[in-house]
Amino acid sequence: MIRGSIGKQKNTSLMGEYASLIGEAILRQRTREAEHAARIEAELADRVKSEFISNMSHELRTPLNTMIGFSKILSEHDKRRIPDTEIVEYSKLILDAAGHLLSVINDILDISKIQSGRYTLDAREISIEDVIQATFSTGRNAAREAGINLDCEIATNLPLVRGDAAKLQQAFSNLVSNAIKFTLKGGAVKLEAVRLNDGGVGVMIRDTGVGMSADELKLATIPFGQVDGGRARWREGTGLGLPIARSLIELHGGQMTIKTEKGIGTEVGVILPSSSTINIREARDAVLGSGGPSLF
Ligand SMILES: Nc1ncnc2c1ncn2[C@@H]1O[C@H](COP(=O)(O)OP(=O)(O)OP(=O)(O)O)[C@@H](O)[C@H]1O
Ligand SMILES: [Mg+2]
Image (cartoon, rainbow, N blue to C red; front, side, top):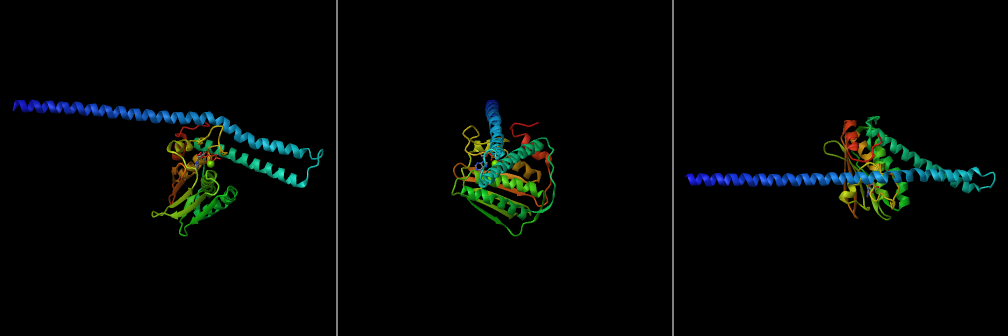
């Protein structure tokens, strides 16, 4: 009897020791994992910060140099006569460069307003079908120039959504522009809008482009973060399109998810509730919490 209970006690204390050893091992593993995740986040943020200045100065200087160079040529028209066709061509180049510069500046102002919680929406009942149609129309030229097949499918039973049509179009245009930009010639991009069972709207933007690895995706969602964001960038941009799109969608009470596979393509899914609740704080926290350079 006594021996049995001593044996039982021994077993129980052995079990207790094992349990605490296992508990400690799990805790150590979790701490290691948390440290590893924090280190990766910090490395990503550092990388974005160091590429930020050189990318931004490139993005601002390139259009400015175009504008200065061609307007200088035009201003010397009285000394050296320029054919009409060249005047038109140079003026278009200046106009394009000015438009590009304006959109870069607008993006910087948008992300800074979002980061400081000062972003406001002009929310009303809107037709999401019109928003998707307008997005499709603006994407068509870029797709044609890039040799990409852009397709659009909109369900006929879409509900009205409460939101800011211009901001939602900006968000979807950013996503479609990415899909076109990061898909090689001959590839395909599809924009699709469906009614969800709960009365909300689902919008999908799928491409057969270069895709991203899991680590690259983390980098891509940080403000100013770009895959291959260094000097050898193979595409232009400031790295703001994706975080701005996500914030605008979250401001509408929606959600954005990204499924992507390196070398296969990317699918961005957006869910907008039927009657959106506008939640500026969540969108702001999402952007502020993601580690990119803060403008405030
Ligand atoms: N559909 C996509 N396929 C592959 N990579 C993508 C896709 N969308 C975004 N990315 C990656 O994510 C990065 C960040 O995208 P984001 O739209 O924020 O910036 P950008 O397109 O580089 O510049 P911007 O949109 O400010 O002109 C891109 O540089 C690219 O590396
Ligand atoms: Mg972009």
